[in-house]
Image (cartoon, rainbow, N blue to C red; front, side):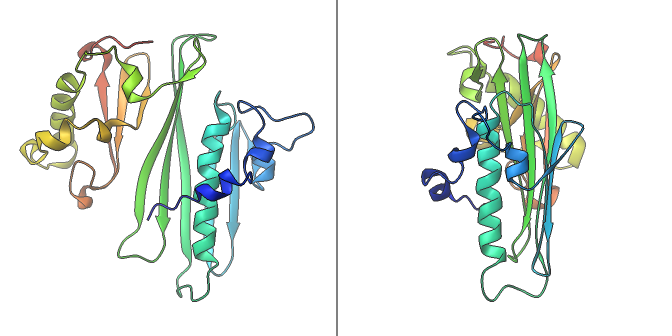
Length: 232
């Protein structure tokens, strides 16, 4: 179950301390400190637990669009805690874990920076949920990168990406590539979570996104040489 509490953001619960364009205002507490986290080697570690729940999050604090990423984490944390602290919670503790990985391409002050969050939530449903959320940033233009802006218009990137994804998922999981329908495999909605490196674009897929739930979370590295030129 993915819980987002947009009302908290709209009401200013987040923006009051995020500042403008991800930079804290003068005298503002850092996002990590506000979340009750501690800094360790450029990572913020937030941990909270009691008899009802366990919450653990690790994320970088040097992403250029830090406000956007932190806002996403705050929304999910607050939604999780709303459920975990509600009356009649189950006997087993609820659980939320957020981990991250970082990738870069090019050389600063240009190039790109990517952060991919992997979020696990167990809220007492039939099975826990796992999903990815990526954040990509063009350091030269100082703008976020989405799948829609990653390639030049009319370049039809999925015609190159989908066959690579089919083959590699079959290699990883043993699920025949033919079971990934072209309707799903050619849908841009399934390629929104990615990271950019000098040599590859890595795509991340939640359980059940392209393969059966039993296959778990997966990722595929697509060589940049197999792709249309990136619009970076």
